Length: 262
Image (cartoon, rainbow, N blue to C red; front, side, top):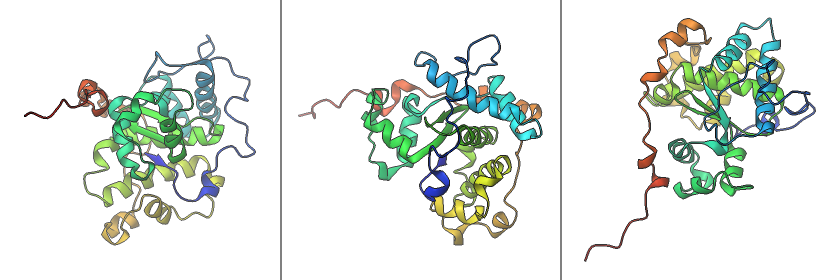
């Protein structure tokens, strides 16, 4: 998950950089476009397709960055699915809302998530730039092109490292390592954005981690594999083996409880 709860200066949306729809792009489905796959292909529009295309093309244009090139290639090869936060699956929404206890979201909010101007959608966008589970990546709308590209780098790294599992294996150390690595890669892609920021302090503060409980060795050497989404890494990361969700059992899909038994 790429949260944006702290340091509003760093995480402000829409500064002087061009927005993702200002790049003169087509709808993302022309013959000249490599395209991408969405989580909910039935709920899409040209504006969103152009938005993601802008971020991916920015990565592709950075020919001197192996990180940017491999991230874009992973998206083009449909190694990941990309969608907006209002298209969270039932289970992914339930996970996200539990990670955001202060947002006041309930399981039933998922049912109105795709409604125009939904309160739940606004709360997600206010608290998150991106979220992932398995190979599903969700991003906030109206990020600048550079921030969108950085978020894609961040979340693809979570996917190849199976952060939805490893993140929780040995908290807070494991959470620190997973987030530090993804933010460090963002800083590699966009160093100006993170100039002067102590990433160790940023991650610990932003994710409310107890520094005293983090393994000192992890703080000293936080960059652990995997860093790049290479073919070899993807061959090891068997997405097909991930345990599928049964949306029929998701809290948002369950019928209300019946009357109590006499």
